[in-house]
Structure formats: structure tokens, C-alpha cells
Length: 283
Figure (cartoon, helix red, strand yellow):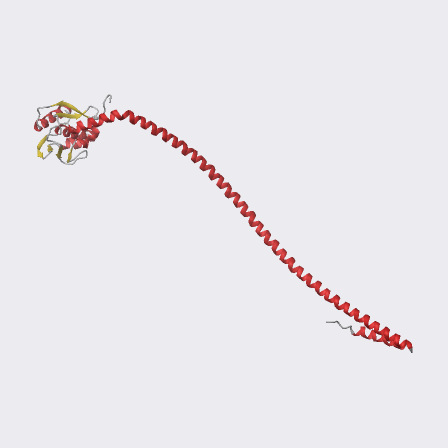
């Protein structure tokens, strides 16, 4: 849409035309009309140029506005890029920390692996040593098995008691012609001779219950209260080993009162395995 000339401009142009027309006469009138026509044409061209200029100015303003929007977008993108860059830097820093932790863990694992390798080597050495000891102990183990069979199945009447150190049972003397009753008397005589400071426990054979000899103690407190734990165990073991040396007896039952170091119960030689004489001088 063309822009119209302002009112002062139109008046100025009309005045100019009147002056020019007034100064024209005869043939000059046509020339004046042509001049006026040229001026109007030029004026129209000026108006067109003005309109074009205004259009270009508007386009320039639109371009500037668009440029400002794009500039703002670029600034926003730059700010976002800076944030992302900061986040990336933080991620890199965290990754470096984690990488250091992994390196430390790897170093620690290598140290532990080295220690485990050393432990394994020691274990292999110890295993080999035990194998050698086992091979060396095999003759002794064979002797122990044979001795155990003999001890647990021995049926040669003999008086048994603990040795001086109360470490194992020993045959005090063999009594091939003894009976269970005479063996009980032998045990009472042996206790009296060996322990004169104590009153006799008064061992007595009450009878047989199958393969079990049933015995009592007239003074059971001498054994269960006065002789200590080791002394009491030695006494029970001596009586059990002695009576089970007979073919018909495999167990001994003590019908006695309960005490601090012993009480009633049914025993055989296996119950006193810690007193079995299994320590040969030379296997």
C-alpha cells in the first residue's frame, strides 16, 4: 500500500504548479503541462521509492528481530552447553576417582592373591610333610590296630592297674587260675598295699548279669570323693580291665552312689581308651 504525501507537501506542490501555470502562456502552456506531468511522475516515483524503502526498512527490522531471537537461542544453547560441559567435567572427575579406586582394589587383590599363593604353597608343603609322616607312621598304626584287638579281646586273667604316672593301664600280674571272686580279693589286697593312707573301698562281686559282672563298693566315697578325678578313673579302669580279662565277662557294672569323681554305670575296656597301653618303645 502506497504512502500518501503529507498535507504541507501537497500544498507546496500545488503552489508550485500554480506558479508554473501562471508563468506559462500560449505554446508554453503545453510545455508547462508536460513539466507538471514530469513532476507528478517524479513525485510518484519518489513515493514508490519511499514505499520500497519503508518495505525494506520493515524487512530489515524483521531481520533484526529474527537475529535477536536467534542470538537469544544461541545464548541459551551456549548456556546449556556450558552446563553440559560442567556435568561432563564432573563425570570425568568421578570417573577418575572410580578408576583410582579400581586401581587400588586391583592392587589390593594382587597382594591378596600373592598371599593366597604363599598360603597354598605352605599348605602343599604341609600336605607333603603329613603324607611322609603318615607313610612313616603306617607300621606304628598297624601295631596299634593289632594291640587294640589284643587288648579289647584279651581273655587271659590278670590283675590290671595304672602305672606310676597314671598315664596308662598295665598288667600287674597274670592270674591264670583265678576266678572272678578271687580277682576281686586280689584287687582289694592290691589297693591296700598301694594306698595305705586310704580306707579300703571294699570291692565286692554281687553277681553276673549275662556278660556283665555286677560289683559294689562298701566305701564308694573313698573312690568318688577322696582320690581325685585321675585316681578314681584309674580305680574304675583297673577293676574293669581285671574282671573283663575273664572269658565270660565283657562289661562291669558299678552299683554305687554318685560322687564328684564317679558314679554308677556299666563299663568295658573301650570306655577307658585313654588308659590303653599303646605307647611302645619302638613301634
